[in-house]
Length: 72
Image (tube, rainbow, N blue to C red; front, top):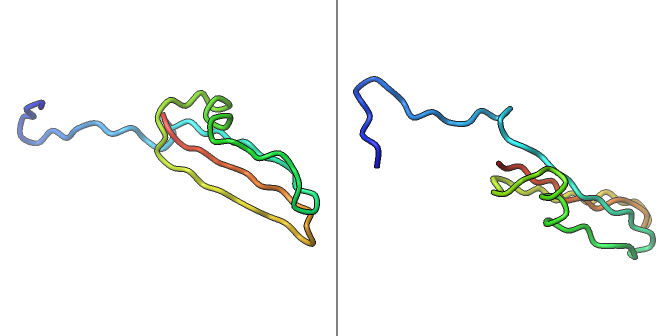
């Protein structure tokens, strides 16, 4: 562990320093390709995941399913 002198704080990465990636797939009547977290990570050049969000927007069986990845 690092010893810190009094009054100094550990630097933390800012939100702007994080990378984001996503992988989406269209859904038609419940059928479609599954988006993968691995593809979302590759899209954003992410090696360490900090947060993972899933979204599913559909109406009458037609819509979009996405994985959003935030990390370093």
